[in-house]
Image 1 (cartoon, helix red, strand yellow):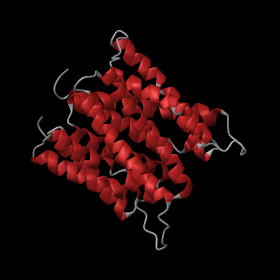
Image 2 (tube, helix red, strand yellow):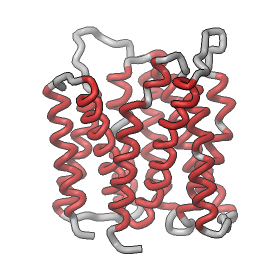
Image 3 (cartoon, one colour):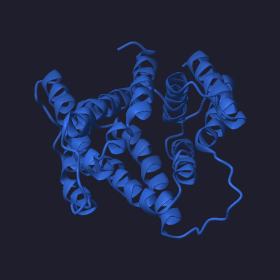
Length: 289
């Protein structure tokens, strides 16, 4: 594997997650609950996991350390997704997503302190631009006050979970192959399906047509494949660069797609977010290894 292959995988994740973000709400708008979209997502993880297992001859790491790290990564990611659904049920999305989007900051701090990662000037400026861009993507000024109740605490937990997950993915690569990591992520996602079902209100009508679970499966597959390419990106790339690059680049693409579809002119904050994210991507890509 060449030294820059991590960038290819990181950009693949950015592309896949960017498109996924633009269309993720499509099934929900047509009567298919978010919690059931989680179930569909966890099932779509199976196909890329089987491909990953086949690519290494079905040799999956199964030591205690491998199982512990793999399940920790999976539970942090999937558990964060479930908690995000609960937070969105009681809090404003335009405040929740900016909070959650700062998760790379935790990854960066842990990677610098515990893994000793460093980057050059271009990379440092790129990281700052990416982190500055993240909250602006979902910023929506509102004169009304908000009750910072359970949704706020849940948002902080999701932030911590996803920040820790990215750190553990990088940590696991010291002793685990990327394929084993992803397979444990898939297993963890499936294990939490009962939790998603518990969050579903089955007393309300649920769209089971083509624009319900079936289109959700196509959309969620983008997320699942993007998760696999993210694991590959962490294998060779530095966590302090991969994390902010993908977390800024994906919202950038989502925003551009949404703008092209709706034909609306974004707010000043959205334009600033796009500019910062684009600058971040260029700087991070230009930074020598």
